Image: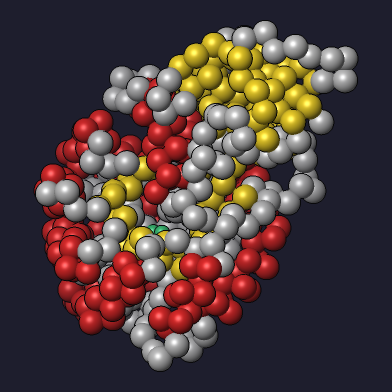
Length: 454
Ligand code: URP
Ligand code: ZN
């Protein structure tokens, strides 16, 4: 099907222009004024609307296996929620079982993701070091994986000690990849968690106290120092605190290859959400925890100054029954919250409309820069001739209130409940296919594809 979008205000990470845009098959084929059309073309009038490249969420956990069961969005429901919010590509994770090869884990994760309606890739996680691992990392690279995720927390399960972390950095640098890092000092956090519980301090409010900002910052500093020695590019996921930002800014000023991501929850929510009864506070249990309003402000400033380059969601929702596993012990509360549907509208409402970021920065943070860092650009994250026709017609005037009763995420709570939002992904195209139109999912059978990254 050929589609011409007329009179659009195109917004990319570098410019705003009024133009028509022509889509043929899966690609953008023409951008310009008054593009000629024939009677067989579908014409869409976008007067008064923005057209932006489809959102790319570089940090989601769909169908994540945990001790509390799977995260409650699978690749189908999570991708539907993503589409409603204007996100057309995601990068999820591959975490092997102990002893399983990275390649085998990647292959089986690709099968799990086949039900996704949007295009997908993965950050692959080495969780230990063994004779075959270097070979496996190389094979993953050949299979289109350019980023590898390590955890400095969760030492009892998937976290890495410093010796293995150093080897991973070395090898990933050698193969020309990037290491993404969950920065929290695992040993110290485990000690604090155990200490609180041994003192009978078991409620959700002890979760943030057991994961203080200085233990995030210490891990950020360590990661930066170790990556510098290995000359490996790194990407710090879900940066939540001002003290961590200081290390990132310093490293970037020195010219080190360090990128920073934050998430809407660390910009818009704070640790007051942990005060109160279990049912009200457990939805906010995530790692790192929510911080102070001063941290929110510091993160906005870092976005503005370019020290934080991307917005991911760390989408990892759980049902209340999964959260309730920790009703007598906060360590057992399923960690994570949903947000895949709300990233663009939150950043538009509280970023663009409150003059914290420009429209160009909004597109850059939510689409173009993730595409560039993770080897998807200009296939994704761009409105250029030859790019995939992943695009969103954004209605800047639409208003609504986020709620568990109207969201598409498969979750019985929503950490943004009651937030008044302006702006809406009115039409969403994924590789030329109209997926969302006026609040309705149009294309239920058009699967997303695995993105081989470069
Ligand atoms: O609490 C969170 N963020 N859960 C998801 C897993 C992780 O740590 O990224
Ligand atoms: Zn995560």
